[in-house]
Image 1 (cartoon, rainbow, N blue to C red):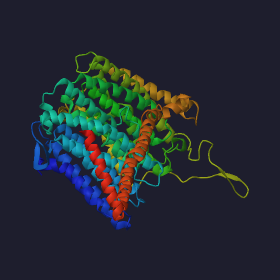
Image 2 (cartoon, rainbow, N blue to C red):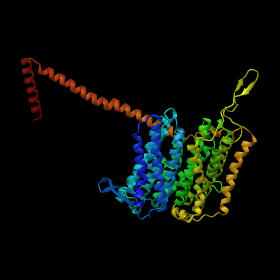
Image 3 (cartoon, rainbow, N blue to C red):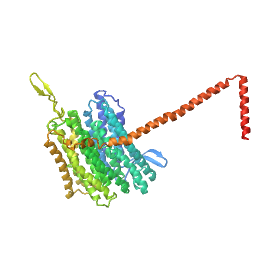
Image 4 (tube, one colour):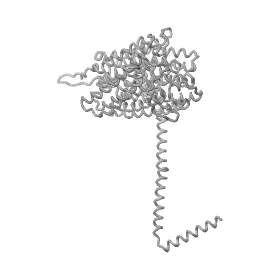
Length: 637
C-alpha cells in the first residue's frame, strides 16, 4: 500500500470500526455477539498498527502532505479539508498509540469477560484510538480539534462505563467538565491562530508571521487545553478520580491517548512556541509544579491505580518541562518510552486486581511466587518509571534532565530561571519516584499476604482446633491478558536503546546519547529514594513505609487538597451563580412572561365584556370617549 493511502486511512480505520461497533446491540447476547464485537475491535486496531508500521518505514517529509481532496466545511474564506501529514515523529507516535490500543483490545476480552456492555466498550475504544490518531496525523487544525473533542467524549463514556460503581459516573462527569474548561481556551487559541493566518492548514499556520501579542495570547489559550487534556496543574485533578474506569481504559488514557495528546499538540506547534518566551515560561512553571505535586501525591496512596495515576501526572510534567526548556525531541522520546512502561504497569495492575480482587496495597503482599509474569512485568515497568538503567525510562528521563541543565545556562527562548525550575523539580522527582515505585513493588509482591487486612486472617473453629482461613491462591492472568504484558515488557525494557539507532535519532532529532558526570546526581537520588523505601519496609516488617510521612500523609493522599481549593474557589461560586440565575429566571424572566400573558388575558376579558354592553350604555361610552379625546386635543393645542 502506498503511503499516500496509508496516511488518511490511519485514523479512518479505527473510527469507522468504532461506528460499526456502536451499531451492535449493547447486551451481552451470548458468545457469538461478544466474539463479533471483539473481532471488530481487534481487527481495527491491528489494521491501524499495520498502517502505522507502513508509515514508520516510509514517513512523509515536512514539506509533503496527503490531501484526500475532501472538503469538510467552508467558513467564509477558510476551507477545512481532510488532510494528513505523518512525518517520522508522527509515525512513531502513531505506532505507540496503535500498539497500546491493540494490547488493550486483546486484554479487555478476558478482563471484561462478564461485562454485558462489552460491545459498546470495544467500539468506544476504537473511536478513542481513531480520535487520537486524527490528532497525530491531521495537518488541519480544525481536523485536529475534531479528534481532540471526540477523545473528550470517549473518555467520558469509558471512565463511566462500569455503572455498578457509584464513583464511576461522578468521575466521568468530573473528567468531562474539567477538561471542557481547558478546551474553551484551546478552541479560542485555535480560532486566533486560524483567523490571523487565514488558513486552517498546519504548515500555513506555522509559517505565518504573527504579532508577538497575538501569538502569545493564542499559545497561552492553547496551554489551557493542554493543561486539561494532559492533566497538568491546575487542571490535573480529574485524572486520579478517573481510575474508577476499567483498568484497560486507564492504560489507554495514560499511555497512548488523552494525556499524551496535549504534549503532542505542543510538539506540533513548537515552531510557534519557540517564538514566545512568555508562553514557554508559563509552560515551565506549570510543568515544575505538576512534576512535584504528582510525585509527592503518589507517595501516600493506598490504591494501586492511584499511585500509577499520580505518577502519570508527574511524568507528563517531565514532557511539558522538556518542551518548556527548548527540547521537543526529549519530550517526544519520553512520551514514547512512557507509553510503553505505563501501559505495561496499568495492564499488570489489572492482572493483580484480577487475582486478589482489590485495588488496595494494604490488602496485597506476597504475590511474587504466585504471579511470576506479573512480578517481572512490574519489575520492568517500575524500574523504567524510576529511571533505572538500562531500562527505557532511564534514557528518556536523562534526556529531559540534560536539556533542562543546558537551558539553565541561558541562550534558549525560555528564560534561565524557568529552566532552573524544571531542572530542580525533575531532580527532586527522581528520588521521590524511586521511593514510591519501590514501596509499591515491596507492598504488592513481598512480605506476608495481607489479603485479610492488617490484623491477619480470621480464625475458623474446627472440632478440636483452630485454624487459619486459607485464601484462594492468586495466579498469573489467562493468556489474552498475559501476552500483552510480555509484549509490552519488551519496549519498556529496551526502547531507550533506540536512541543509539541513527534512524530513530534522526526521526526525533535527538542529540547523540552520552553518559557523563551529570548522570551521577540523578543516580544518587534514585538510589537514595529506593534505598530509603526499602529500609523503612525492612526495618519494621508489616508497616507501610508511607506511615513515615506522618501527619503529611492525608494531605498528600488528597493531592495537596487542591480538589477542596477548586471546590471553594470554583464550584461553590458557580453553584451560587447558578442559584441566582435560576432565581432571576424564575422570578423575573418567567414572571414577566407570565405577567404579560396574564395581563393580556385580563385585558381581553375586559374588552369582551365591553362588547356585550347594551346599546344605550355603549352610546354613552362612545360619547364619553369622544369628549375625552377632544379635551386631550384641545389641551395639547
